[in-house]
Length: 267
Image (tube, rainbow, N blue to C red; front, side, top):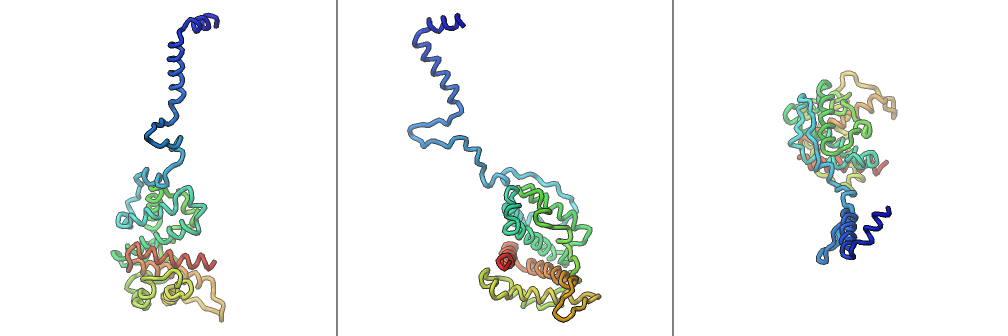
């Protein structure tokens, strides 16, 4: 306006300089302060979150209170699984990183519990709340909330499914447990994929306990019935749980991930 313009003309050069400095300070308030003795800091650094952000802001999971799995003893394993299944990357790296780690975690949790229960599987009543608790713990540390769909896991992944043997005593009386442990307690990830020493021992043990069923499935020559193949695969999971019960969680994870890598590379 005319009055404001007239007032500006009457103001002294010193007043105008003060006004300019105050205006510039207001405009530069959002810029990083640079001092001669320090290197300039990146502008808006919070736009790039830390890779550990999902774990620094972990939430307390709401557990069912029904599951006997010891999450505290397997804390480092659960944290590693949460990292491998971080929400932003789980769907992208599902078959290579997240899902192999998640399946190994399920095997190890049940295998470790068998040392107390003497059973290499959860019953069907507890499998559902236990799977929910596992999801809650992982999600609380930043894992994807869609792991069941991403990795196709179900409560049956914690049970014996179609395998006829789940008791530790019956298992050890059926298979050559000392040979199985010797073949798999420590594997070379490269040699194992070629020699299949541990994989062969697992297949042999799984076949032995699969044949314990009261309704053996017939095989026609080289053709194996799908039901029998499914039963052997379910028994392989039971075998892996037994192995996990004989190894510490870290060693068990190394063995299980090594075996999975052989299957991925083969595919």
